Amino acid sequence: MEDRRKLNLLVILFLISANVFVWQALFNLGLNNSLEVMFFDVGQGDAVFIETPHGHQILIDGGPDSKILEKLAKEMPFWDKTIDLIILTHPEKDHMAGLLKVLERYKVEQILWTGIIRNTADYNKWQELIEKEKAKTTIAEASQKIEAGRVSFNILYPFESLEGEEFKNSNNTSVIAQLIFGNNSFLFTGDAAKSVEKKILSRCKEDVNCLLDSDVLKVSHHGSKTSTSEEFLREVSPKIAVISCGKNNPYHHPHQEVLKNLEKFDIKILRTDQNGDIKVTSNGIDYKVK
Ligand SMILES: [Zn+2]
Image (tube, rainbow, N blue to C red; front, side, top):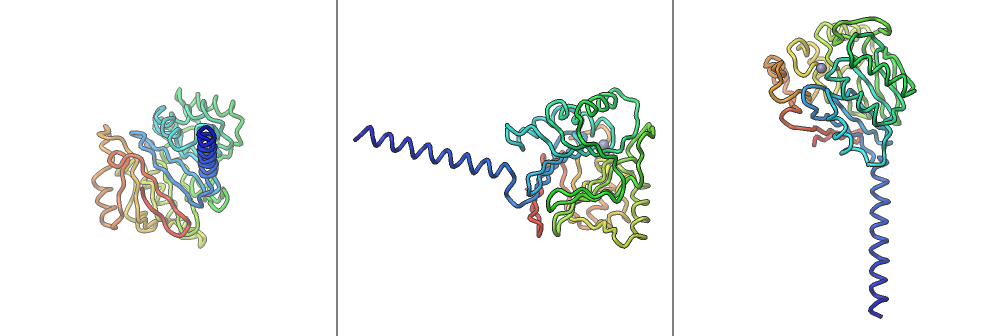
């Protein structure tokens, strides 16, 4: 009798743990009806990980080094070594170097970038790795729309393909994209400067379908004063501004002028150097910050 009771207990414990595993697996498949946008604290650089309600995983930039691998390991289940889409906003070290590590470690299904040419060791490595990866590659151009279930990305910039053009500084070639899920929207701006913001604003004025209005703005160029003009902020009118920058970075990002402008418009400021990883979740109706 005693042995039988022990056996029963073991069976029950096994069933409970099996059940937990099933639930965990379901949860990891992303069947949780929410969109998660994670602004990783990768020091001085950008890396944003997005998981859609259908479980699509998207990575915008990879930060300056291998720190991205630790961050992804925390967000993705250990057996999941596939990323659906990588967006490289522009091939500068603080956005691209981490993606080289990701390409070496993960299977990447799709890549969206500008296809511009640069002359750096990291850039050559990027070219070599994406060729090896055999992912479906798309050259970013305004008016493209990427759909991932109920979530979509609208590409706003560059206006036309820059493929094959060479740039010494690629900040102003940054892919600018708006992520939309139901009522909620996020604007990703790479490192684009005020001159690009101006071009987008004037193009948007002529296009009735162009809506820059977004709940969350990834502040351009780590909060440098060369980006984030008042006119741009007025049009985007975000509730939350996320600044991705390193603690005590040598560029003194974010700049006081940008912080003041954000405060003037009553925009809540979140900073990776102060808040660490920042997660915004949306159910398509409203959003929450963690
Ligand atoms: Zn940057």
